[in-house]
Amino acid sequence: MDTSTGMLREDALKGRTIVVTGGGTGLGRSMATYFLRLGASVCITSRKLDVLERTAKELEAETGGTVLPVACDVRSHLDVDRLVATAVERFGTVDALLNNAAGNFISPTERLSPKAFETIIGIVLQGTVNCTLAFGKHWIAKGETGKAVLNITTTYAWTGSCYVVPSACAKAGVLALTRSLAVEWARYGIRHNAIAPGPFPTKGAWDRLLPGEMMERFSFAKRVPLGRVGTHQELADLAAYLISPYSGFINGEVVTIDGGEWLKGAGQFNMLDQIEPGMWDAIERQVRGVRGS
Image (cartoon, rainbow, N blue to C red; front, side):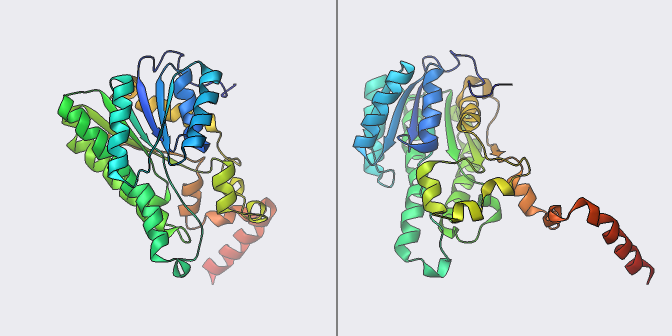
């Protein structure tokens, strides 16, 4: 079956406006592209206006949709307030917010400066808080219902992870925010859900996380039970569904899409998949010998 063309029907998001933070490149761009193909208008944000404007032109040419590029540092609540005002002025209303902006790098924690923590937590957690509060307060004040907030978190938000501690702390906060507001703001007709992606390759992010030969030495595909990494369309399908009216009864959920990666890492004896099949007979004899002693 060809999964590259998308899951939802072509008009699934027709007439809706979606704001995508970190939408100029990588996974944010891929998700924004699919939203456009489904009939939505999209506002993409990041700090680099030149990148956003180039992406907007390319996506409009590719999809025929409408893309509004807005420079915004999500760490600044004043920037975010201007984002809300600009998007509402252009489109009249915003129907969904995708909090995708993120930052990350690998490092032993003892090598990190306070600034390193401040940067990652500022973008990932404070940025998500700023955008969620700004759009949520606007919707509540206007009495607008049927809105959706979708956050991008990670599986190590609930397990923790060495060498990416600032990101793990920030993503855990995003997870708590998602579940908390799913209950508190449901009465206003605002749904909150999250996606916890596994390995979905993007040129910039992966080169920073695993530079040079590390990409092959620590191949993510080898950690996934399905034996591969995810495709951008698979993630875009899930994101589009969770912000669409079709998922109207899903609220407070965190959907993992990682091919079983985190479950493999969580199992205490999962490393035994490295044992060759022919060795199990000898292992069984050894185990029986121990039991009989």
